Amino acid sequence: MAGQADDFNYNKQLVQDEFADLNLLEQTVVDNSFMTLSEMESKNMISSRFGNLNLANNLMMEPALGIPGFWWGCIFGPLGLLAVYVITDNDQAEVKKALTGCLVSTGVNILFYVLYASMYTIY
Image 1 (tube, rainbow, N blue to C red):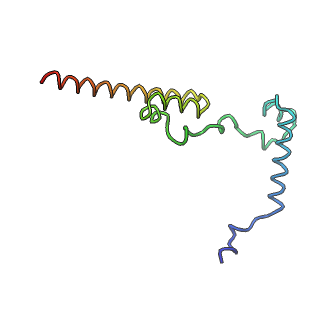
Image 2: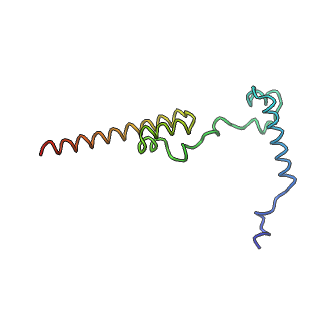
Image 3: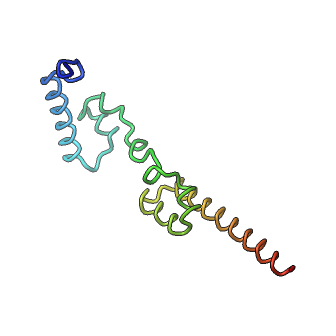
């Protein structure tokens, strides 16, 4: 019965048309690799429906491996900072969050060490 559901039916010609459009877009980008998307659209090299893509914001929309940069720095310290730097290709916002996490973790560790050391020097 599940094989007859609408979820499993598709228009084969529509799918092939979409892939043909994508292949055309890919070939246009390959042939004009030194032009921006807006330049290609202004010269009518690509369809206007592709011109509305905001590719810069879609490249990296989530933190490194789904874990926020702060926690990378807080838990793993300098290694977490390095991991965020490498994984996110130097995404400044994530690296800054990882640095903040690293500094917070270091500060908390120093505070606990000072409290621990002062407890045993008093007695």
